[in-house]
Structure formats: structure tokens, C-alpha cells
Length: 203
Image (cartoon, rainbow, N blue to C red; front, side, top):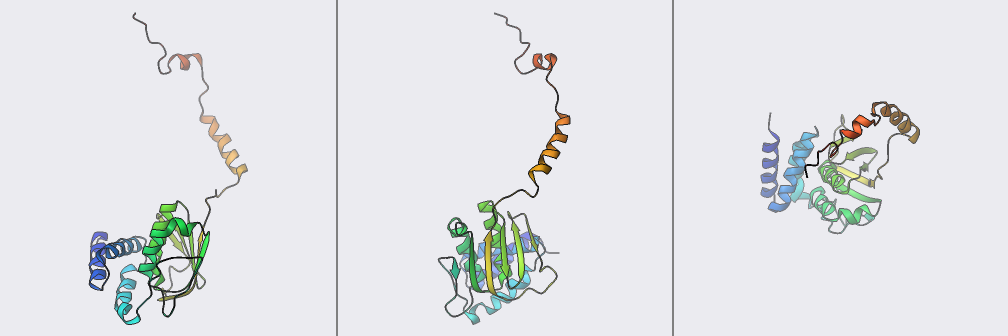
């Protein structure tokens, strides 16, 4: 079994050999490592993508807006991912944004996962009835785990989710009330043993 270090290094070098700069290639290495760490087919999809890269001339999107559509071809998931990381604070303010045609969308997912950690919010990535929930770069959940990953996402939407509790205030109060049974009532002996108490003045 290949180590995560081997996966990252080989992905980086292969991306550089395919024409990406060293800086972008390093980002690819990190992202493929992340996909494999979460049990997603990063190597398989990167391999296929790099073979298609120069043939299909995927497009780069430098400035991300609310609605994004390529001029002729599909968006490159890697350049799009790098742009997203660079502009995440601005893009987050949109609350949601949409795209048309992203090639190999699975390669875009780890950039979203890392962006989730940067902004401290969960991100919902929806394309063609498939969903991925990115949780602060700690885990990725999806309804697509046992299916074949497509090499093209036609209609994409990204939602930035506000942080909320998964429980009601009533449930919280009930649990907190139970926790209060562990609180120790303050007594005179505890007061005397507190920090600074009981020290002798030798002056």
C-alpha cells in the first residue's frame, strides 16, 4: 500500500510534468493526498484528467462570481480550486454560487474541503443530483460514495452553511441540568484552600 507521502509527491511531480507550475502542482499533491485519505479515488481521477488536459484545453476561471459559465469548454477543476482558495473570503460573502461544466469535479472537492477549514463553515457541494458535505477539512460525506465518479459536472451549486447547533435549546438545558450534579458546592474549607488562602504573613 502506498503511503500518503508517496501519493502527494508523485501527484505533484506528475502534475508538473503535465504542464502545471510547481506551485499549482504542490496544491494538486495536497488535494490528491486528501482525497485518498478520505477514501475517494484521487489517483484514478488525476490520472484520467492529466491524460485529457492538453487534448480538451480546459478553461481557467480567474475571478469567481455568483454565476459562472465557461466560454467554450469545461472549467479546469485544479485552476478553479486554486482560484477558490485565493478568493474564498469574497466568494463566501455570496452565500452561494453556481457553475456550469466543471471537468472531473472530484478533483475540485478537496479545494472546497480546505476552504471550509479556512472560513470555519461547512460547505455543501451539489452537482447533477449528487451532494458532498465538506466539514472543516475533517471529513467529507456524500451520497455518491458507491457510484462511479463522473468526469463532468454540468450544473453545480455551492452553498456556504451558517454554523448552527444540531440540538434544541430545550435539549441543551436538559443535559446541562444533569451536568450540574457534578458541580461541587463551595464550603468554608474549600474557600480556605483556594489559591492564596492560608498563607502566613511573616512580616
